Structures are given as structure tokens and as C-alpha cells.
Amino acid sequence: MPYTVEDLTPLRKKLQISVPASEVDEVLTRVLELYRASATFKGFRRGKAPAAMVEKRFQREIYGEAVSDLVQKNLDAALQERALIPASRFEVSPGDLVRGADFSCAVSFEVMPEFPLPPHEGLRVEQRQATVTDQEVEDLLQRLCDNRATVLPVTEERLPADGDMVQLDFDGCDASGDPLPDVSGRDRIFILGREEVVPDFEALIKTLKAGESGEGPVAFPPDHFQKELAGRTVSMKIRLKTLSERRPAVLDDAFAREASAFGTLEEMRQGIRDRFIHSRAETHKSEARKKLLDSLLEATDFPVPEAMLESNISLVAAQMRRNLERFGQSLDGFVPDPEKDLRAEARPEALRRAREQILLQAVAREHGLAVSEGELDMHLHHLARQSGEDYRAARESYSRNEGFLRVLRERLLEDKALDFVYDKAVVTLIPADGPADGPADGPVDGPAGDPADIPAASPADGGAARETPFSLAEDAGEPREPAEAAPPLPDAG
Image 1 (cartoon, rainbow, N blue to C red):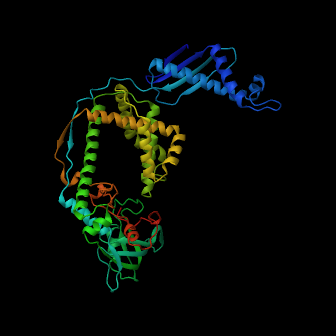
Image 2: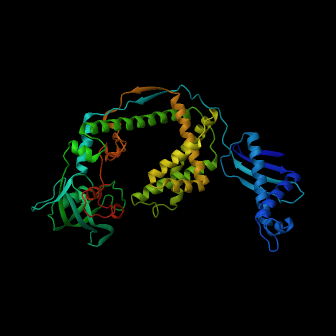
Image 3: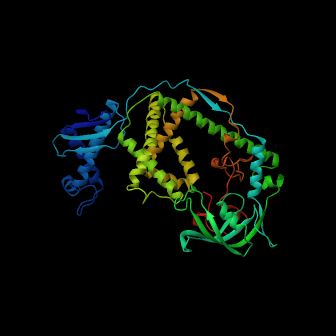
């Protein structure tokens, strides 16, 4: 198969392929026979119609498939012979396909850069030890007790206090007394004393008894996540509808059996401790892996294919857009071209991601690493479980998306390559940084592997688990609105 390769840029190639007439006729005949075998024509049994009749009716489809087959076969052969690794889509410019004549086509695409890998075996890296204090275990147990508190209506006439649960309506007004759009809520539920709302809003709640209404100024901090309220003072009208007292559960063996798969409180304590250690060990391993990857990226340099960079920019920008939308924010109206600004801001992170992918894929090729079908299937099973989907239905859906499976396989391969570097490294354990070590995340497994009802703590809260305004009302069997329907405007942000 004659072909030539032209370097358009250091990473962009143009492959000019020539196919002899004999191969063209062979492929056309094979594709024609496939159509002939399944085509039906009046007066002929299936598969018995004359080839000329079939070719006339399906000429466009037959010749289109033949072109695809010829390009794919010869392109694959050229890539393998030249050891070129594509990093972009193929731009194919085929010539005319004619029986009995040679066929030619041009294919343009970007390739992965070639570069010498830096030394990546036997690297030295420090990793923090995973530790947990007795106080951290007890603090988590107390939060669990608080989460399972019994909620009782307050019968005496008194003002709300920290720890109480309140249900209320609120409306915000501007200086003229006109309602502010979206600054309102109905049947909102809050637990006082947890910084779920801005201080002035909570202070105003604490001036009202159940059934009373009140109004007062509420100042929003300058760094409030809703820009239209940041630094403003709003007149807030509140109607306190119900006031409830929360009585935490008693911490004993019965609580352990109810809240987890453990039989005793001491077993539950040990389970929590084990989960802390496991979670932190994984976190610290991830930190060490990142340090190793950073050192490799600093030790080498290579160009990044433009298509690969643009793809990563799109992914990072989309994530940034989703993060803004989560907090009710948008760049629309603030900058002339929001999409351009997002992509510009996303570029540095996208460039780093692309460099990581190129480097780790090179490590994988160097050591013959691969992702097996079993490993891919195991990860798909994990994704289905995370999303709550039926595995078979999810697997079928994923299988129809070739692009998704290709990207997933690449990410798993990159993770395997980084594992290879970590496993070959000389890891030195060093003391952890105390409370900043981070909380345990995820469930605590009991003897039978059943998860205990232990909520994940938020690193942003320094390890303290913060509940949504509605979670405890749901636990107590009280009616509540869906969390997504609740306007977040008075929240502390």
C-alpha cells in the first residue's frame, strides 16, 4: 500500500494513501455481496437478484461503505507501520471511487508527541501517616446521636434557642418595601445554632414565638455567594409557624445496633476508627501520587495536541459552569462573552490535565500496561451502583456510547500507570498534621459489610458534618419540601 506522510506541524500529520484498482474492486465486490444477500426485489428470491440491479439501487450506500473500509484498513496499517498514535479526529478527504481505477485519499490528524520519559521508577516521596484521635471518634458519635434526635413540638410559650428546629415563611423587601424577586421561602425548616443562615436572619428568628411574625434588617456578608445580595442589607419579614425541640439519641449499645451493623457501642467505635484510618490512608496515598506526578511533569517537557487541549478546556469549562449554577450564579450579563471568559479561565487547568494524560499514557505504553475487559466491567458496575441504575441496563447504555467507553478506558489506563509509578516508588511515612488531617468519608462497614448510617463530614467545615436545613425534619418524620425547591437566599453561604 503506497502512502506518504507530510508534517504539517510537529504534531499534525497529513497521510496521503493510494489504493490499487485490484483492492478497490475486491472491496466493492465484497460490500455489494453483503447488500445482495439481504436485498429483496420483486420477482427474485432474497439474495438472488442480479448484482448490477443491487448496485444500481444501493450505489450510494455500497460505495460509501467501500470508501470507509478502504480508508480504515489502509489508515490502520500506516499508523501501525509508522508508530503514530492519533490524538484527534481524522479529517478525511477521499477521491472518487471508480471500479477498475486506483483510489486515493488524504487524512489529516494530530498525533501524540514523542519524548523521552524521565526516570520514574524508584522515586522518593513522603506520605503522611493516617491517624485518628479518640476525640474525633467521640465527636462523630455525638453528631450521629444528634442526627437521630427525637423532634417534639415545644408546648410552653418561649423563644427559640440553639438546637431548636423552626419552620417558617420569609419574604425579603428592598428599602422601598417592595418584594425582592426570589428572596422568599415557604415552610422552610432550619436548625438554629448551626450557622445554616446569616447571623441577622437567625437573630430575627430568635425574637419570635411560634405563631408570631416579625420584621427586621438582615445584613448579608460582602463575600456572600449570591452576588446580588453580597454586602446588602435587606428588610426581612418572617412568620414563625412551628417551634420544635430536638432531643439527641442516647449513646449506648442499642443505638449502635440501630444506627449501624455493629452489635455494641465499642464495636461501632472501632468501626469508625477503622474507617477514619482507611479513608485518610487513601487520601494521603492520593497526595503522594500527585506529588510523584508533579515531579514527573516538572522533569520533562513536550508539546500538547491542540485538539486534546481544546477537548479538556471544554470539559473544565463545563464543570466551572455547573459549579456556578449550583450556587445560582452566572457570568451572563457581567462579561461580553461569558463562554470565552470561561474557556480562558479553564485553559491552565485543561493544559495540566492534557499533560498528565500524555505522560501517563506514555508510561503505560513503556511498560505494556493495559485495561482488561474485567477491569472495565468492574468500573462500569461501580458507576451503575453510584447512580442507582440497574447494572445490565447501564452496561447496555454505556456499550452503545463508544466515545464514553474509549475515554473511560483511557482514564483507567492512566490511573493504572500512576499506580505503577507509586508502587515502584520509595515511600517514607511522616507524621500527619493533626486535625487538618481530614475526616473520614463514606460509611462504616459492620461485620456483615452493611454500611452504618454515618454521614460524610465536609472538609470545608474542618471535619464537622453540616446537614441541610431539611435532613433532620425528614429523619423525624416531619413533612418537608424537596431540598432543591428551597431558595437558598438567607443561607450563610
